[in-house]
Image (cartoon, rainbow, N blue to C red; front, side):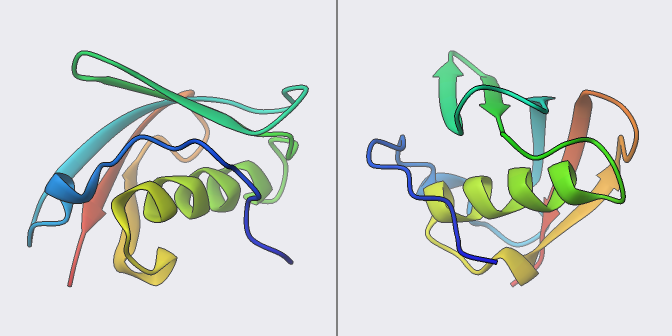
Length: 91
């Protein structure tokens, strides 16, 4: 599957620290993939449906792209079936 084709992502490279926990509010089945950072709240909308982990994988890809890291470095720690998710960065 191709990566997200987002043109304007915020720079979240400061979050790429060992053991960093990143809270994300995710919305599946959106009209388009996009990301918004409002203060400390990271919101990600993905077109993928919330079935078989597709939306979680799409959220991780977008977050990783904004952080400038490989998606394999992000682990979903909490929120597999919830909108509020917690990712951990492991270098």
